[in-house]
Amino acid sequence: PLNWRMRDFYAGIGNKTIFTYGQQRHIETDWLDLIDAIDRGWSPLSWSPDNFLEAFPLPLQYNPIHQRFQGDRTTLVPNLVL
Image (cartoon, rainbow, N blue to C red; front, side, top):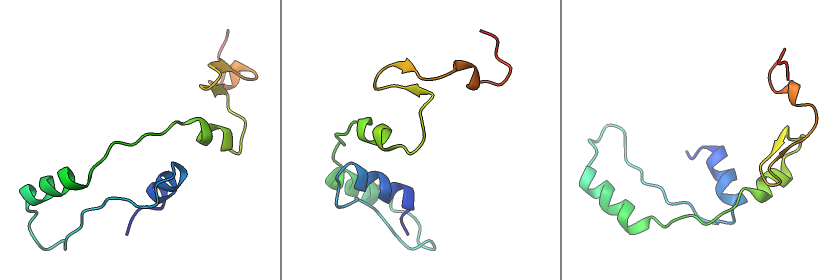
């Protein structure tokens, strides 16, 4: 079964399908067949983390979209003296 985090990620970037390669565990891997399957099925992802960061349910300590810290930077590391 596909990991739920990967399904969530691909759904979040708008991909309706996910390329996978599977085989039974007791069968030795045919590496040439696997490489050929990757060559046929792979395509580069085009995505931006902006929607993920905007949808994050908690405040971000550092917002890479705006490239700035938000709030008290000392909460990043306990007992940090700035």
